[in-house]
Image (cartoon, rainbow, N blue to C red; front, side, top):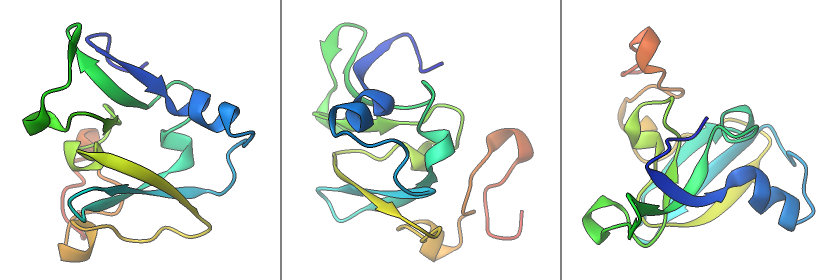
Length: 118
């Protein structure tokens, strides 16, 4: 379940409102600063992720990704892209900004998947 202190729009609701049902296996989150990160749809759906707009009842501060931040709390935080402005659905797992620079393609903190060969 997505973090209780954050409020926003569940990715499930975004897909439903767009009339989509897990359109592809992967997504790239794009941001206003040119940053991007890859995330499997399975990690965005079923209540696992949201586009956060508020934290503790207040608008998400700019330095923490406001006005909108992708929040994927069960993965390393570089997957929770700040200033998100677009989700691009892809058939294959395409590397984002940090993944192109040697970070792990998935980023599971419980498996210590920080770098490419972890």
